[in-house]
Image 1 (cartoon, one colour):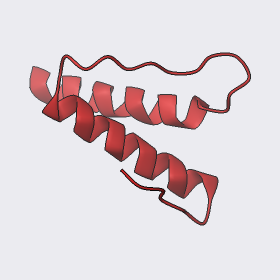
Image 2: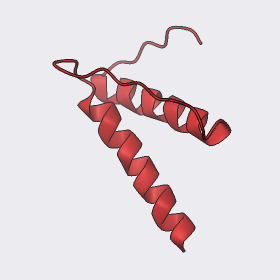
Image 3: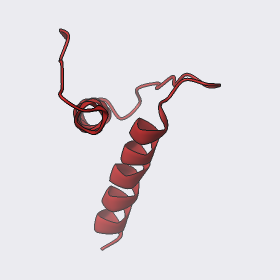
Image 4: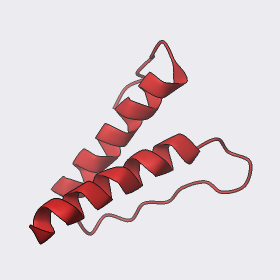
Length: 61
């Protein structure tokens, strides 16, 4: 993976969340380590949780 530059933090969050979601679909047993503390990852975490919830609701049918 290379460096992906986006115009806004929101766009960067969308790209990062899509990358993580794709990785988890391709390798469901992947281990995901997220920084804690003052690191500004809240947008990515929300996007991942939204994707997971959406998939769960879709699979629950």
